[in-house]
Length: 199
Image (cartoon, rainbow, N blue to C red; front, side, top):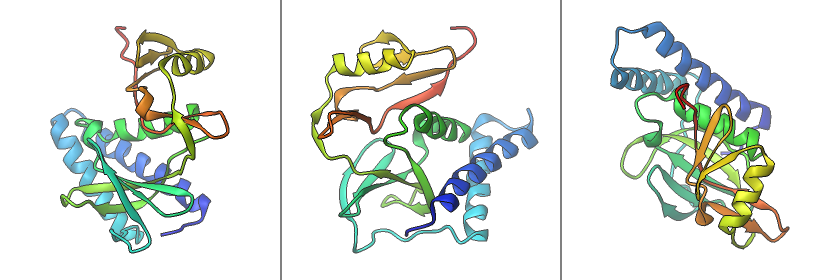
């Protein structure tokens, strides 16, 4: 399952580019739901062409949890592996790639790397994401989260929602933000989207 770092970054970039091209090529002809189906088919072809299919579960990893979009595993040493079913991307997988790229921009101490594709326990097509494992003292507090986000130039809309001129970050709640043993905050699982022009 290990891949060279440059190859990992390339998978994310190429998959994002493929999904953008797929939607651009369709134009206004297809419904939003049709975009997503076509994007998924293109990603499956991409996975097959470049041997990016990964088998799970692997005996070297331990199941940790299941959330709304992720099945989460621990590799036993340094990484968390998330099988992401694209559910929170809505009707356009570009939203998934925007979120991952923005996460890595703002929360570079806990980046996502994409290493391939698989099917989860529900037989849903998934991106396989790897994040560093955080050794945490506790969950972050709402005040710590707000202070961190304000330092990044974000404005608080609600206790768990923030925006700047380009992005909205939400679900920034204590169980998605950890306070590490190094006294740093780690935003392990927030939602990010582009702001709409009318806001």
